Figure 1 (cartoon, rainbow, N blue to C red):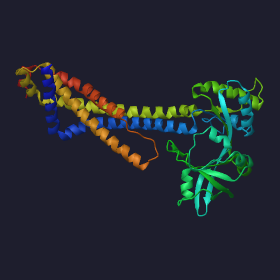
Figure 2 (figure 1 turned 45 degrees about the vertical axis):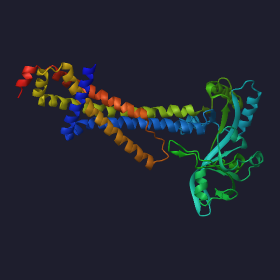
Figure 3 (figure 1 turned 90 degrees about the vertical axis):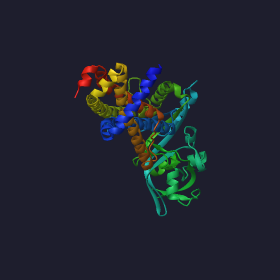
Figure 4 (figure 1 turned 120 degrees about the horizontal axis):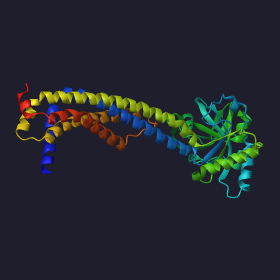
Length: 417
């Protein structure tokens, strides 16, 4: 064991001396490994960031909410099958709630109607374009996890009366009232004045693409009065009792909606029930494509890098044939020679791996600074995976030349010119 430890230490010293003596050659040899490690870490960072951002966004959408709508989320809205369907009416929520309350041990808790569109919001010289405008009832708080930075949500009286009151997302409030003091002030929404009674706490974005802070929420009765039949979408959101029994809740909701719609047993559903699982299914091909592209680039880079390292190690064996012969004549074992060249190849790959990780981290910092809202993370697992891949590449590429060096005949090696 002591001899083996000495051989390891000595092999590392020889590898360091050889790499230091041939810096340029070593760097060019490791370039393929560097590119491969950058590719695998960026791929892992991208997939990890997508998963993190998705989970955060799903928490905002509600992982215990079912959405009854005219179109499935992952569908083409121009498809005639969906365009010819009857609209989802806000009255369905009340009828669904009646069925839920009358169902013993129901998996459903609360049904709330919503409608949405995009409108510009103005306050004096300030304007925010394409603000997500949501119309709902005071019961919306029962199915959402919204917090307020200031103020409150509209109450039952304001909801039923269709009062011109609103709650603003924090980005909209900050843009319209940069000096603060938004509560009690008026904003203009499609030529109608709405009094600000609440400002939501910061919620974040969906994968850095859609901001949950760029919204305005108004009573559904007011929404119908001003925006109905003007390119708005309606749905009913239903909170389930337990997200672990989502399939049972979905089946129960489907049966209840068929009763509300008055569908006969032989008629197909003319509505869609969606949940965050639909987004997961839509996102899987994206993640798979990123992984496939990353694996292809990583595999190609590492293959090229491994061929380069194998070639250079063979060249190194040829250049040091007399040295190998001398060491064998002095009693060096085959294992010692094999270990020497194998560690040299692994060392080059490890240096390439470290360089690739450093470059990836710098890219990570740059992307984080340029797009602070985009969810990316550089985990320790990626570092470990990158180093393991580097070691594996060094072992695979360096074994053949190291084996050939260990098999050299010492007499023939000493005569080698």
